[in-house]
Amino acid sequence: LFNDESRSVFIGNVLIIENDSMGSKRGDIRCEESTFLFSSLENKTFRCERNVKVHDYRDNTSILSKSLFYDVQEEYSKATGDPYFKWVSGNKTTEVTADILERFDKQSLMYAKGTVIVDNGINKASSSLGIYSVEKKIITLFGTPKILDKASGDEVSSREIIFDLEENKMLLKSDIQGSISID
Image 1 (cartoon, helix red, strand yellow):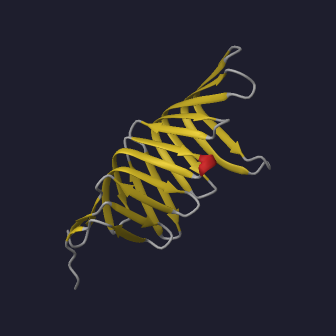
Image 2 (cartoon, helix red, strand yellow):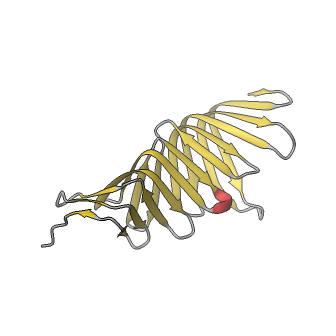
């Protein structure tokens, strides 16, 4: 532990527990090193490094990455270094990998940017931008996304692909190209 007036550094098995304004446990963050920066009493940020694991109890999601930046006041986080996002509900699981994951908790949105891959076990889609709506439990892919049916090998592209995580369904919107085999 290192501590001065503007920052505290924790090294080892770091556990950060997040509570909401009512004191209920919202989530936790685990990592090997964390630096808390205090520019004022209201403005607090922290960075977690190495083996970062974030679990959000509100929507049963988790993020794994090499690095995470979090702004407490803005409720904004940015995961870099091979970030991986996992959503689980019952026997349904959807996994997302990207170059960058940015979560805006006040807006209940998360952006996946760069090389974005979404895999729900049945289909695997790729794009350059994905937006996850926490409230609606959907992921919308933009940037000429493509989707691959893992069983048949059929591939389809569209201007926009929407994954409904609760229903484990997808919707292709406008400029659809490709073919799908129906048995």
